[in-house]
Image (tube, rainbow, N blue to C red):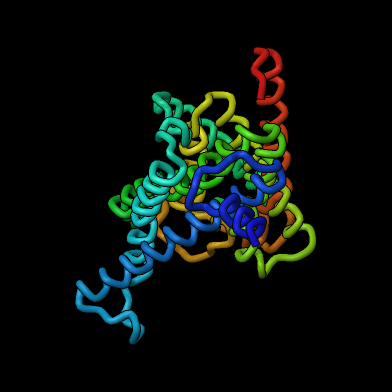
Length: 308
């Protein structure tokens, strides 16, 4: 009985114990990931429901805000989730915000943002050249206010995923395991929540959706370790999503809901060139761009003798 009690104490997410076998510690970090993710989601869902009631709507009767409004509420709500995770980090892990990855290198966020914009634009331009995506010009009526508001939303959305994967998971694991194990586990936990959005894909499109998730997760991890901060990963992640969805108007990780965008672009068919319904994140072209970027980053680190 005492061994079971000790086992439960070791893997509990409500303490900062680290003195245990490596496999057990990995299990503990995985539990911590789901604990803070689901915990923060439940709290935020409650806040959204209360917000509906406060605005005279009853979500229990199907009375909810329109898609654009609920999207903004959801994305800005991610800031609350980040706050909850940081609170957990301080109270239960007894660590500082800088140990989560939010170091004083906040300016590197812009480096990541530039890289993210370049990667998505290069991928899309090449796919357009192949004819798998059609460029139909600029929309005549553009909701610039909404598009600008979505930039703020995506900043929080990208940061949330990075706080969970490159913050909580990567930072905890690299202290007790090899950096390669830390990258591998953080990548696995990054992929799992995205799988539910791949239900309509199969074959090559599904394969490249998973391959690209692995590649981009490796890029997020390497840029985090290179700068010793999650700021650049946050910038890269947020701007990639924002440019793809609200600037180019293309599907984002399986989300094909139409939203305000600057450019009018459409996929032609469902194939491995454009990634089908899932979007360019399931494209073979994107895989080549990301793989090339990963090779360049790895070479750059070795040349500068930066150890992972």
